[in-house]
Image (cartoon, rainbow, N blue to C red; front, side, top):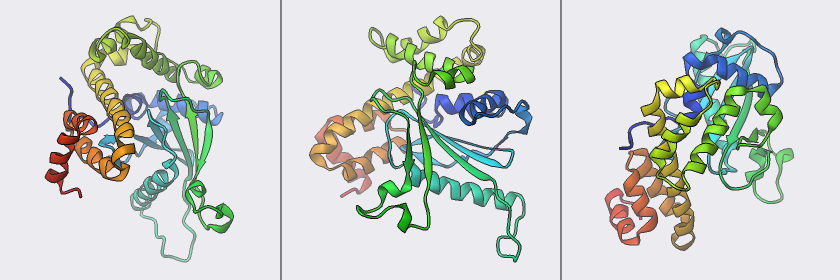
Length: 284
């Protein structure tokens, strides 16, 4: 059975936990070309209530005057700059209160420098790119006419991509192998068995294997939930063309946020089921 209450993703489970800060540090060094060595210097600051489509999927931390906000996405989302901007505001508010800073005084308040990244591992082909808030501005207007710009680096972390990055961060490379192995297994078996096979067939010298084996049930729940979400989103995109993405999207978001994955799947595929669910949640 799927644990419908679990809101985390495997990426965050690996790179956003206190006990795994050495992997977080490895990822940070690989992304930024730095060489920090002490994981104890990392302060995890992830926002516990940052929810998107019912999944908490961000990893935030402080390290040497930098505030990093990392997101994992299995579907391409060009709206990440505005989402990251909203999360960043929450993180700065949290930082200011934690350090008792006075932003209303005459002295400038020192703040950590934000570093924003999205790690994409969806099945659709997408190259690395920099997503900008100004991409969403009305046609003919750009960053030059705005007092605010946000840049988010999107990195494709599918197996076989960004080899230099993978060589610099072994846990990330092993994570991409694991995801690809699940996809291969999925061709001839169910998702639950596909995850079990991937864990069992993982090479013994992989750094993350012990952690995955020790948390097998939780890992399986997260992988199954992510897989179901990805399938639901695909059905949503197909049905949304006919019915209107805003209305259907609101319904899917509501259902996933409540852990009602089976209802979300029915809503994406069955018009009669959608009608009843629209009425249940008062979506017109």
